[in-house]
Length: 69
Length: 400
Image 1 (tube, each protein chain N blue to C red):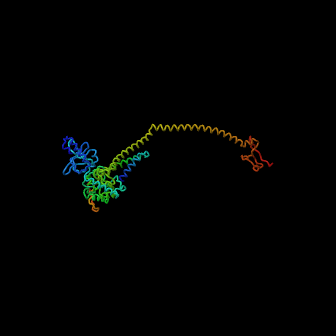
Image 2: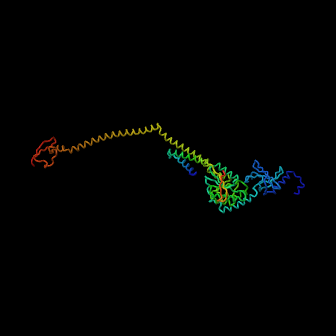
Image 3: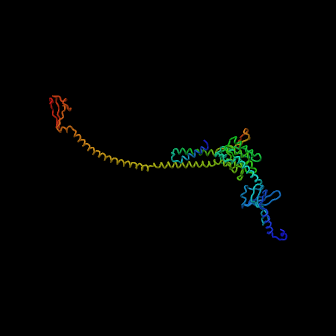
């Protein structure tokens, strides 16, 4: 699932959770799912290590990409 | 003037004469030179010397004028100033009182930029409908800039701090000199051929108006306008405007600011996520207290009370019902008795005994069968005659 979809999902969960129509059992499941998603997103945001690459060569057939960082 | 030769003047009188001559004769000046000994005062006025190879002149620029200067002047800057001469009587010095100051040659550059701006606008490079939205969560950011410049370091720092998960693809370009325009344009085109990034920062650190000119060239402006990848421009300092800013999908005042704009959604997402977590907790807590409230309605005391209410109301109904039943039964009995006597009278009226009492007799065989026809009463046979008060045996005779 993509980043944006996950964020949407969490928003929906928060919405459902605030409705008193949601049965308690379902609310608990939703809460756990929402918290897990939030943590996962947070982790993706802060933990992942980026790569910085440099394009060498100008012509399209002589392009070479090397890692900088 | 001739009379001056024969007049004895005080210093003040002479100075006043010189002051009038200077100030009335030298105004609306435009002077070019190099700044030296630049001394900004704590009160906001600028004091400096304007010089060239052969001469120098003191200069002052008051606070009321300095705010309009769009660059921080420093020693060595070649500038063109406008102003008038001013004499400071107490010291007997004169200076140029500066109204406006621009970097030398800047006027020509501005005029050239204006000319190109009109041209590019006509060519449609700045058209609003060309603008593409910047993706909020880019996965890889392309950067067209000098690989050794401070701009790249600034961008890498900002991105690394704000969104460490986002990859960066550097497309190294020459950003200074004659090759710059072509080099930058070529890298923008190459980025679109490679399609390895979802947003492109076109950037360069600060420099003179001339240094930034390549970023106002047609090659660069056209490449940016035609780029399928959304472009964020971040060229020079806040005050610099290059034409690439008009063609870009988003304009940032500096390289760092470009990186900030590109990572903006990630930063606010970070805050939103923390908001989500506490929102979820809060919602869950209120959902739980709702459930608790629902449970509380089932405690012993209130249950006893509610059941007692139910029992009481049922008991009341029961008492009512049994009372009604008693009444109904007795009423039923009374009416049954009435009906019985009616029936009895009607039965009585129909009873053969009642007929017998009126003088009729029933003829029966000895075993009790009623003889209703003379054919069944054979002469000589024995029959029973039943009267109201009893029976007599009889023998059947011949026909009458």
